[in-house]
Image (cartoon, rainbow, N blue to C red; front, side, top):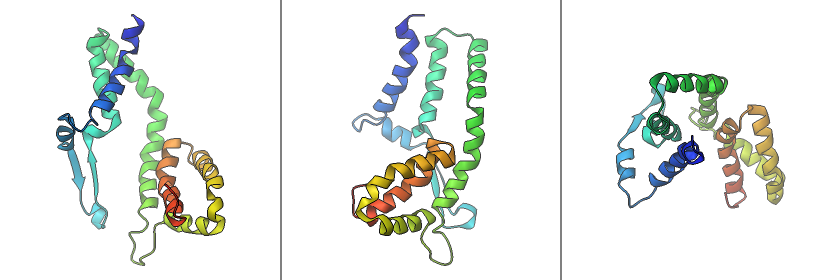
Length: 175
């Protein structure tokens, strides 16, 4: 296999992720029609929605299917690659399966009968008052600590982005 052919899946992923975001191309409207929404989740005020084709993982799946043709794979070879990839990421999938809902509960703790702010914003208000204008010195520590505690940068970003934005808003700094 040539280097160009070997790198082509990465090129395709980059191109697709860029092309679907260009306003003057028709893809955004087409992709937006794949939205799935759930209102009043579990009888609460929480509404969730997801545009299925706008999830970067869908681009990876599409490119992997294109690679059947691109790399001239048999179905058996393709399926073997899928199984190997799944084994590689299965630990992360299990961790994310439980941590993503937990993070969503953490973020949506403002949906309560007491009218309290969400946990991340309550913590952000406290830290903003405690550190003041010196907070930018602490922001990287919060990020590193979050990644260490969560065991994942992805989970840390989901969990602490609202917190970081809350501190920035409280201190009237750029997010």
